Length: 458
Ligand SMILES: NC(=O)c1ccc[n+]([C@@H]2O[C@H](COP(=O)([O-])OP(=O)(O)OC[C@H]3O[C@@H](n4cnc5c(N)ncnc54)[C@H](O)[C@@H]3O)[C@@H](O)[C@H]2O)c1
Image (cartoon, rainbow, N blue to C red; front, side, top):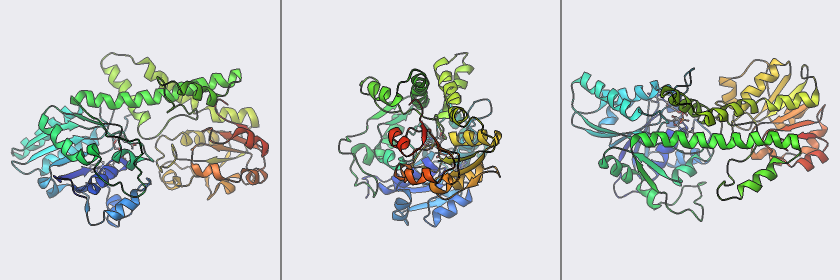
């Protein structure tokens, strides 16, 4: 597949966003090089193996073999590029501010390698605080001045909205594409890059299905500052919507209502909508927590309090404690109990465990003297590498997690958990408590199988 005007694109950072974007642009016919400073990632990619779990990603990677390049530095490649997309991590600092060191490092490496007289559009796809487009411009200018070379470049903001677990789908079929730029030339270049997506002229890759009613994504053209703020506003709103339903799950439990019925009842109102109204153990992942903290920090820098966003964060922190509170209410004593934890990923269909509720729940259970067995279909390696404590017992199935357990707690909404023989599983346990932290399973059926079943808000 070749767009009319294929571009040469360098993507810096080959994680969930960078790799997905790079592969999609390569599939659409652009000449793409994905760069990552982590040599392990590049070595895997060069063997056409995906370093992350994402639906359809490894298949697309194999399909693109020979068409896309991978490199551990940008070096000479940048001299031929039309666009450099920055998709590196932007983690939180202790104080809630965003750590921009990776973005600045990427900008420096671009400035260090651009050719004299080259024109390059630098695109911030990472989620970055207000003013970062300007900051990247400054860093690039400093670097070029140091080298004494004159290059032409622009910096545009192009925030990413993909959902992990559906990253390819969302890249090919976005709800909108936001471009924040000061110059029309930058907008036009990005319009050219996204043309196959804006015009939907491509046949989707395997496992990526175009919904029947999907039309054409709007191109939203803004100033760089508005584009930067759009991303934070979107994430803060979504986080707040989940915290809102979680707050009402608490009141539903107390008054004897079922939050799932309440959510359906309000979600049918077009002004509210049905999405992000699933009560549970709260939000996590690599975006909502850090982005919510970051916008609160930005507000504070301007002396501007953001009580709604702060409350979303507070409700989420409280929500993570509900699982242990429910275990205490049913088992009474936690010390010495065996608890099977089902799910480590922060949500289904990803191996990402960053800020996953499971991390807090497991830590809390261990503090209270429980024996903890954990199972996740794909996220166990990541948990083992980054968070594990020696006491945690890793098992290979739900059945093994349940064997001789006093209680099971479900923390990730994996589809696999819907298809377990729960009747059989219940009979292998020592106790019968089941805390469904995602309201994934039918309460009546689980009760019939002999579980003392507690959902969130139901
Ligand atoms: N993950 C998501 O669902 C998602 C969605 C929308 C936006 N975002 C934003 O996109 C950005 C990237 O997120 P991610 O989840 O893909 O992160 P990630 O941690 O999966 O990937 C980032 C990659 O960048 C690499 N890197 C860091 N500095 C580099 C440098 N100077 N040169 C080359 N490589 C470098 C790292 O090694 C890492 O592999 C973040 O700002 C995030 O907030 C993420």
